[in-house]
Amino acid sequence: MIRSLSAAALAGVAALTLVGCGSDDKAAPAGTDRLGGTVTVFAAASLTETFTELGKQFEAAHPGVKVVYSFGASSALAEQINQGAPADVFASAAPKNMQQVQDKGEVTGAPVTFVRNRLEIAVPKGNPGHITGLADFGKTEPKIALCAEQVPCGAAAKTVFEVAGVNPQPDTREADVKAVLTKVKLGEVDAALVYRTDVLSAGAQVEGIDFPEAAKAINDYPVAPLAHAPNSAAAATFVEFVKSDQAKTVFAKAGFDAP
Image 1 (spheres, rainbow, N blue to C red):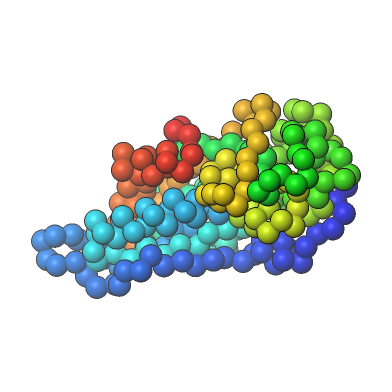
Image 2: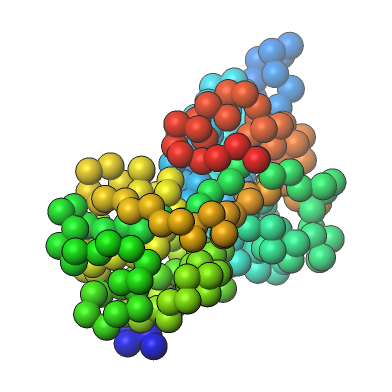
């Protein structure tokens, strides 16, 4: 039973965070790089750190290009794309949301799975709620945060709870995994389910607890250029870069699994 639902979570489902990677739009010198302009990437919230780093590397390799991101829940991003939001690339935290965009004819070619991710229990530093495993999410005492079920981290959480036979008792459901992680960082909840990569990105602010059922709900992350991309050339090149060995190094360091 959900005991409360934060207003911020409801508002956040539709919110999109635009992040520029700090380059300008000037064209590359003749004969060095034919790409130019802006490439707009809609990406799952759990890719914030890695894609921001890759954006800097991509801009360095292509001086005429500026990378702009919209990070958020994959379900919300897919809806935005299907409603005509101008974007060049979509990177989803689940195939389901990519399929929603494909079904509307908004994807060019076949999406490619570039990384995988799994859930981990996140607790505040020192584990004040004395959380030991997934069974604690079925108790009324700890304060618990989960992703909304329509977003990939929430769907994965639902699967692991079903596998474990646990009836979760969340105090709040948030719009995306970063909002859930923030609850843990601030000590507003005793535990949450987030991705392993989010636990690592939080550093000393949170602690992670592995649980065996996580292996039953591993998320595949597909990426694809979009059919109505304003900058189709840069979109295709960016997708190839995400699949490169250089990008694989960034993803591995962040804790993602190879596909």
